Image 1 (tube, rainbow over the protein chains, first blue to last red):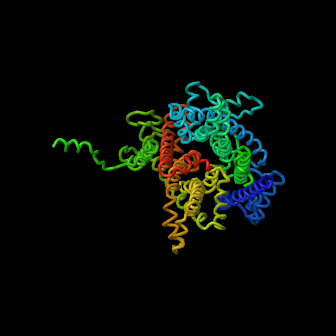
Image 2 (cartoon, rainbow over the protein chains, first blue to last red):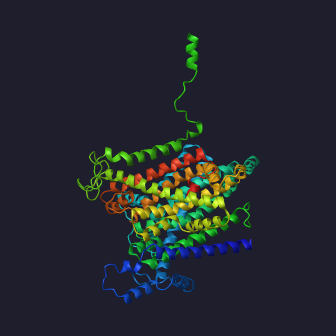
Length: 318
Length: 297
């Protein structure tokens, strides 16, 4: 077990290293000459000015030197450099942004599970009934509907029917919890639908499998009430793979969050990434992408470990 | 005489097109019909509905009417004509990105699964690297860094869907390689190329077809998202994503602008997902559904 944990940890660190190198190289190789883009049309720019900008951007010297400098500052000082556009240090911006994105994702996952679990169970138990077809259709629509369109539809719906629009400026959860909730519920709903559909479909499939197993029949034959068998025996086991899927979904929710954050004007991590891309703010692009990928990698590793612990049939030592 | 007639009646008439029972899959057929409809719209839609998608020859922000069934946009262009053009764009970008993934993913997966060892290690690590990013985020960053054009959107989407292709093909090849007919073919002196093209490839077509359908839907959804974020197809050219982005400013006055392009995206994605589910049931019960393919587990 310990060797397994150590191995997984080393693999995770190696992935993080590879990810950081990839982001570093993408920003340098895919953009063409950053300096000529920045100074485009500025004939008066001297080499001195250009070199100063190179230094500010951390793109002076060899790639090896640039990378160790960049990664070293992040690792040892938690310093992501300065935003090129505003000149502000990036770390506090990200610290603020990560709260918003985290709240959005937690809310999104909760909504998804709240609906997906009952729907998946009903769909499996009442197989081929109208409820099952309804749930399955919902599932297929859920994986096909673009989150950003759903967000727009929600805004149209509430503004037409209730004559209400979500607050435009971000309100933190500590200053006004209710206003904060009304602000987050729509973006959370729109990102949760895809996860809801995935989890529902997965749970339906595993429930169907579990319900056919011997121990479920034995429990029923012993006279255990139907509801107890369903919840205590079947659902508990069917949920194991669902936990993994829900865990992996966290990563995809980050991507979904990036888009709805821009629609609902919430300055989260994804909002900053898209803002940085449109402003060609390369240090901020590097930092936000690295943060998102790092969270994704760490969450996936944790989910792998949790899966091994939840299901005794899977030997983690392999 | 009458017995002859009776006998003739009793024998069921031969149908010209006999569909095997396993192909009668309602979800798959529904998907095929939707996909065929959208492809037809893209191919001949502008011959039937001859309005120019780029010509603002009507009043602006009109609701649906007989003259403009889907209304008009903020500068008086016909929304139906723009949606037809958007179908062409979506299918073109989707097809190119999927073709990139199909070719690159199959080659990489094949190399890794066939030669194993160092090649496999190398390919697998590259695949893992792509999987270390949420797909859409990687597409956003690549398209954003390369610059927002149609070609770069195709490249970005192609890259993110190559990884799952390569992974599934690799696993399928590894499975096929375990069968005795590969060993016997090799023992008979077949070259690598012959084994790959005559024995391995025909045995992995089923998962490849299913993947193509499922990831076609992902490619279209990604294109719409990139265009929505301003990183894909640029206005004034019509794409479903950038039409929705423009429509955001008019949600208060003209909700039709937000309804139709989004519905178009949902319908085509739904069609490909249905088709993928149906094809999976028919061709390859081993590969997981859309669920599994999308979540990669």
